[in-house]
Image 1: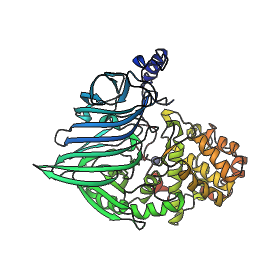
Image 2: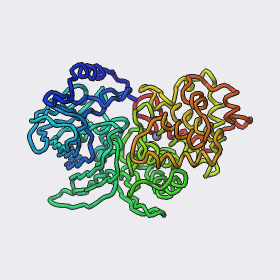
Image 3: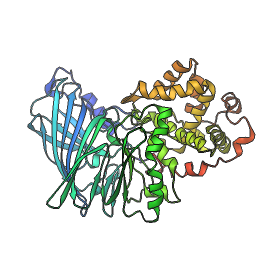
Image 4: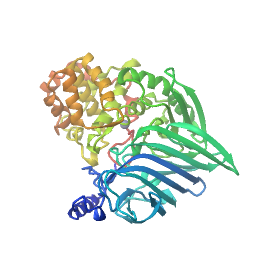
Length: 503
Ligand SMILES: [Zn+2]
């Protein structure tokens, strides 16, 4: 992921020193970060958003985005000032209908000072009017807004919102969304959830999307471009909307042959993870040159590169598995990334087993056997990899290997009960790696501290006795590459720099 300077942490510390008793609402500042140890400036303190209403207009020819964001929030402390995370140019902010003053600071902070201080526990409506060219805005030297020949796309992790709407940008603050986008006729706007309606007037078409279950800010997406849109319904009754750029060239067929199986794959995953948690499904492929895919809620983002060598249902399995592991149950802090990626990768292993291309055990054995003890792979601790290794391949492969070890230790019945029960226990909320360990111990009835420490937290390859007791690589089979390996590896890309690979 991005290499960045953690200077915003210093800003947070400075504000802490200014902290005064909460009763003094007239001088009570909301923190510029929500408290994430990896990304101290991400999210904000002092309020919780329940709904984003985004009314936007986008001009594909120039990449100009203008809009009005209305946030429904509640204060969690007295506030004389609070922050939003945002990069575009703001012309007006109103708090409960009254004009507020505002200023920018840090890499992506918008500081809002309401005319009157807000008391703790108050319902607040914040209206932000803005415009700008998202592709021209950078924070920490990068942009998450991808320009395409026919428009633009906002999709990235952990940060994408700054380029298209003001937010409390951290998974801890989930909200529902109405995203209404006006685009020139002949162009489509794709977002999360259900398409409530469209209307055309004077050469412009408005798309009204609704995501009606709690959604993390990084899982909100917007794509504008010329798409072929397909619709259908899964066997279990979930409406499916997919969108493919008309400019995918030779990759068009492979993309469609993969993503049109979304309903089938979501139904298959629900046997392991519980009922599909949303009222909409799909996927979209814009004409972008990025290499990664992302589990944007209800409607994952895929890159054309995912289909460069033919169809790849494994990447669809990965992103749809995140609808439970990542979207329904989200990280508490970004250090908990294993509860997303370890499980999405393990779902790919289960799919391989389902397709008769190698069992999860065989793939686990292969990962263990094919990585020598000196491989940097084993230095990464998937349970707390550090921001620089948040999307390292070890979080995925060593992360899934941990789940195979857990499966062998607890037995199939308990293991699959854990996979399914977890998504219900923390549905629409957040959880940590520690929460998962506790839950696995509760369901399996076994002490698992040593297992998790060995497989998730030690910066070294688990030794032969540990592998033996977890039934990993017990036979010579570990050296045989499973048939599915290349398809799964094709969803890796390069995890350890930039925004490549499959999130
Ligand atoms: Zn992923």
